[in-house]
Image 1 (cartoon, helix red, strand yellow):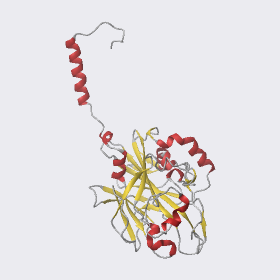
Image 2 (cartoon, helix red, strand yellow):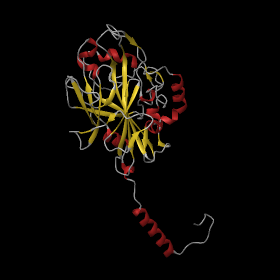
Image 3 (cartoon, helix red, strand yellow):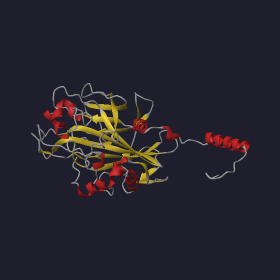
Image 4 (cartoon, helix red, strand yellow):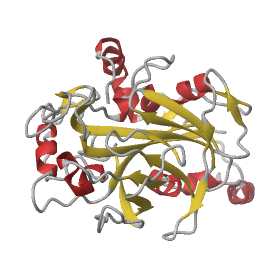
Length: 353
């Protein structure tokens, strides 16, 4: 190759031949199939069909609405301390939304799904607390095998202060530092052409596991991933579409992480004891729900929030992975707050969600 100061030029015919060879090589070079897929499309493809048990008994149940999925700003604001009260106001519509974030390495996509309820509640007075806001969820590990959407290898779900691990039938991932708690099954959706993983949440406290480790008992909702947000027609609606919201969107949940109206501290939602929270029950706790970067299983090696912010580390700790598992991220917006997240992991009180 000639530098800028060179005055010697190749003959025109040679230059034309080189150009033709380079053009042919560019056309022949395979483009990785996964390069064409957006993170939003990827999240929609793997978003779970979700079974939500519903309890309609007791005044705090709101006739079942306390178990409906929704967004953190369902009431039109980003104030975490009015969600318990606003959920109970006449005319409140709890349209179905689920949050997601995608981070990437050269070998895997990691998708975190975050399920929000305005209330974590109970209907009896004995040794049970309730609190404003509730955040549980799941991590899906997707191997980048060259196909459009990759292949789902494993899932880790969040049930309060415990994580549970699952693999689908035929996965190449096996037990590692943690035992596998069950099989992640798949189900066809009536709203697209894909088989989706299936998750479920209990009523009241909303712990999340792979279905059917939790299941609908009586009334319940079946949520399907979609591009629209529907409000359940009743507490026993078995076809409700939910819309995904990108945690990393401009002005989104991650951008609001320092908003003291929404968060009491990094990764923990602000919540108080206003309204009837705790009335007729053991107590109402404050600041007790967590965003994905605040999730923690205190008995496990990964630190608070790393299920979302460093899922490759958690995957390596939980599973034995037969193929390569890169630990360097090519896309991870959480990494920009690594120091703050580490400090929160060191100083935050135990997770009580």
